[in-house]
Image (cartoon, rainbow, N blue to C red; front, side, top):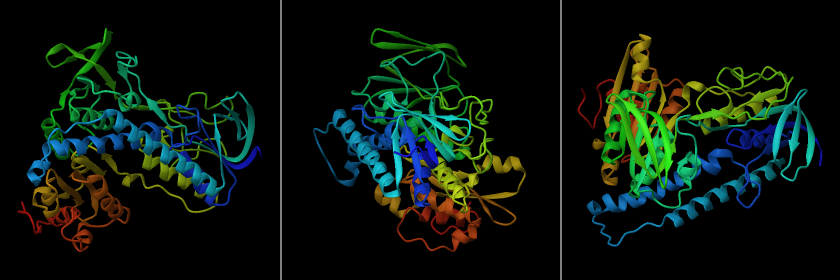
Length: 475
């Protein structure tokens, strides 16, 4: 096997494997290195996202939402069932099957694109050389004209509550629970904590979420955040804000958690404690001395706006560099870099990276919040349309939430879109496209939306920005 390539990608997650595939499509010789392997020791590309993040979490969210709707919502449709039960083992088996199918799909895509997959550890050496160590101890040195670092991220461990499986767990552990814990504690009310907390709450767990910050979803539009908090309360998620965890101790089969809030010292006893306080860039044993690649004060690899590092021919993409730790952001960076290497045009518009929380209702946003626009001093206008007035949402019995558009008062440019409601993660794509082309609310107003569809909520929100909504009262 050749040890010289045009491109060597270290990391096969959602940033690395698209970079490798696009480089292969660009007729470059490519190798992609990844350490992840299945329980049986076989090769598994896709990184955290596919193996223990985005995809398995959505599989469990879908399964548990179906169970919840059957219990709580189907009777209003005239559908009645008795003796309904769930099987966690089957849910986990289904989840595992989806993951296996998709990871095998990446290997098929590699083959079609001429990418050489290498299972093992890759370490950057000076001069665009890569030390590769296989699981069997075999070592090789690869050379490349370009190296793309896509090493990803790892869960942050809380000093006051260090991981201690199976009682104190990270997101991977929370995805693989074999039974529903009677009492589940979640540290962190971010995307991961809310999604997996929802999974186990729907199956009957008493879920308490401890969030150190005083505000709920502080980076989201606050009108949206308040609406989301109301719905989580209806799901019986006990979210405690301003709760700073000071300690966690395993006692027998339980975990004793201590924290402080506005009332002083508090305690909580749970069967499992899930720590979801965020992720950190993973660069362990990635860089040898003298490579010219630098890390910033938070451990991220320093790159410019096109993901170039300080070393010639070395690039870095995904969670290990600045910006939101989102799979789709990493994917677009990987594709951009592979195209730039091939002499093609490549760009990522960081102003239009959407965020999605796959709870029920779903939450999605792109661009600036109303608070951010207000703070900038730019005159603006807002259009809000409730799903309660949307015919399709009503027919689906999922009329919670709203679509909101924030636009400039002077030139009508759309500055931000915020949606909480059914399939918000799908609806946000229209907003991303509109903002990519600097569209105005008038552009959306004049775009014909099929009826009845959920997308009409976005259309009506655009109309509402000028107090011209048809299907709701203009305020």
